Length: 349
Image (cartoon, rainbow, N blue to C red):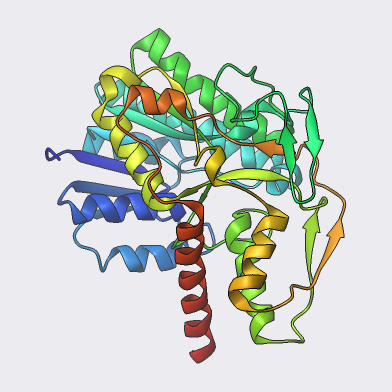
């Protein structure tokens, strides 16, 4: 890859730290921008320091001066805008907090790029929640999962936007600002509407990162028969497609390299229908791998929870050389190994 300067906002988060590590390993000029607010981000920063040289900016995306100074001083060639409030439940509890990070923060970044680095390529991490709960479509309830009979191979970008929940509104507003700044000001923006990304360095919580969270509960229960039950919102038949972190990184890099085709576009990003999984199907995998019986309780479904979101990834595959390489079973094995190792390390401290 030609030597470029990359700015990664939220660069100590799950996706951000993994992308930063890849770029550092390839000898790129990397600037990591993060306020270290999120659980696990400080650990990811320490991990990044073992990967090589990079510049760390301990700043806040909500602060216009922080963002302007970062763009003005570094003048990046590429910005991976990954800083965000990522939990739907948090957005309901703290909608102002959610707005300030996702909408105001993204606006701050766009204005700074427009003023000081107008040739930079900006790729934004949006979400499938911009499509709302998708209840307007028809579903079949199978033994372990829901199936959307209207979109059996996944939802395309042609589905109407329908923001729902403060999180859906804030990410959707930023999503549209990114696309509009291309139309109105000629910025080189690209939007990724993600399904479920998973892998190492993902410090999941009960309201974000469902694969990692349920894996952690399963590992704890397999080690301690008295470990308390955990809860599942809804009946567990909700389906998402899984994209392993290495494939997600490749997607960002391929979109940047193919910017002549990708700029100004929004893409649904995920593992596709072959890599889809329901919560109950994840539990079957975990019980088999860990030789245990999971102890959990079903509670009411979350507001605006989609029965199914599987990305139709044909558009991004057409516009770039990218496609997922790591199938869900391999990715699940890799993540389970990472979580097991992290849990064992924590037990020895």
